[in-house]
Image (cartoon, rainbow, N blue to C red; front, side, top):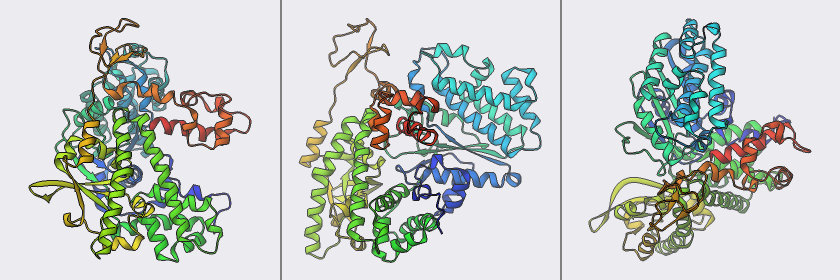
Length: 594
């Protein structure tokens, strides 16, 4: 029976980062033991999957599993989120100074490691006091590790929110020179972790880095993966959750060599894949109201359509259920298929809106995002719909996607990668022969697109699909639309003033110095055009909040940055008290983190 004080939203919460350990243990559904084992072994892994597909849930559960057997195995599992990394963008880097991003990244990891050691309370915890007293240089607090935790936490907070213009000012902010030296050099940091491993007789530390690329700027990503590579050690196992396509590993990090690859993939007509999503949904919905689950599952075509359209993404399926409830469908005697399709369309449309807003975050991919949406909606979907109509008339196998020749893909990979990042498209990077000496990759649409756009009539048609080249279309650089697209995506350099506070920019090469402030001109990395500054300036209408709350907030706040900086007390106002104020604050943090 449903607990009256709980809403459906409490059971289908989709931001796993904010879920507590008890919820993770209660609602985790195991799909692959192998993936849990790899996330806890001694190897380095890149854990790749599109947004919302379940990477965070797996990583948090893996950490819980490791620590549950800590007494027996002496393996320490530490989950680390880098959600606030965008704040570091405000600090300008000057040569020969300590790096605020590395200070913050290693500081976050160290703090989480220390907290986890304390919570598991090994027998020789006194060594932790001694070790921390050495780096903080405070003999008076030798037996108070909580004091050192607080010092480190305050330093991280200063890095995130302090009034710091450039990295030269950080020398006066660190609790000790020894600490800043440890946090500025991956080798020093690794040495310190090795000392902790020795102090506590650990077999290894497993570091599970969540959102390890998505929340970082383009420049931060390159620094992070150099750091990731530098941590490699038999006793330090690093696992990083990454997104397909958009991650910048830099010149010195080689996928497969510096870290093995582990991916979360899904295919709509795989029964095991489908059952996995059903089990996730069933466990949560039944705990809320068993009547809801009976209504969803009484007709196989209803639950199969909903779960298939998830594309393996629990977050997407939760949103479909939420939309069905908000339209009152669960108050009827039964759930109607047309209402399911309508809900899928609403959720898909929201996903397209989110895709469009990526232009504000993935500045480097701005034009690719514009062109990708246009390509899908005006060319690829109509083509595929017409293709299946003809094949249906001939009783032939149907298609759920298309092939892209490797030569075409290599010229405009970003167009397809941003779609894969948003889980609108899935890319199989296995090279297949597509005839006449060409090779290509198969790309399939999110099933919600296939159903809502009528490319497939209903979920039963997934039984008649084929990815064989003879049953699918293929696109090449010579395809007129693709040739036109490649021409459109040829860019010229844009020159910006090197002064962080100056907004002058030009496409002309003639300016060696800025005419406004006389600082040197440069060609910046596109995304380094202060993403932090750009996102802060966005209107509060962009937050995922009701129109009423936005209207009330607009009386006090003009942009997202102001809410992002505000305390809960500062957000409070008439009709907005503790719970709503916290929700508003979290909405701003989520927007800045993406």
